[in-house]
Length: 251
Image (cartoon, rainbow, N blue to C red; front, side, top):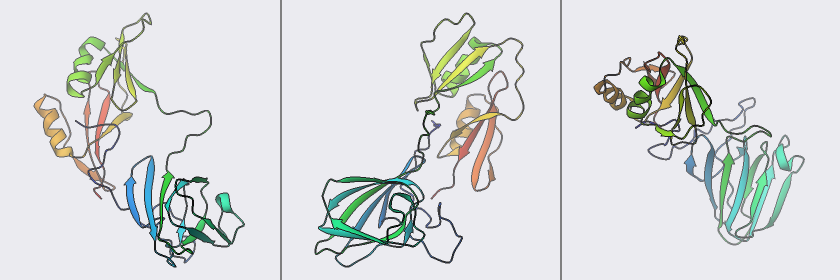
């Protein structure tokens, strides 16, 4: 079953140019030596440096947390235009404290240098989707339907959503759990006419298999097509609300 939240099959290796400005001739490399996780919310790196070794020159384009695992002394050499938490610094060094966690704001342009006698090991977590003050994650999306009882099997049997308790608002409708922290709320409106264009997209790892599954259930689905590296297909609920299947490029 597809999901509104992408769960990659493997761990992609980020393009070194991802999220990095190309306004000068410097070559920015990876934040760490190995990427452990990369999704819509976070990117997690492992950084390992032998004594005397240094990391790539890199640009922190996201806020991040450094968790020191092992080593004795570590330093950072900053570019003159480095920003963020350590803006204005040219070099910082200090003792490694295994288990210590350090938060830093985005903007740094630097190299990490192992100035100690022991191998250095650190885990770096880049926060790719920070929450702004006063703004929380999406809680639900609402759809009008002509007849919610007629529409309900589409949302439960076809989309695989689960009906959850709904207060009595004085008008018919339903609440459905996507299983990914976001609900879909149906509101019955017998005079509803679905608009052309607005839609909700579900991510899938195998769009061909998902199209075949929907068609076996009697749902009309467009043939998948490619746009900007993504494969897409479209279908509708019984009231004409439009939905998209979206398969991102494979790493």
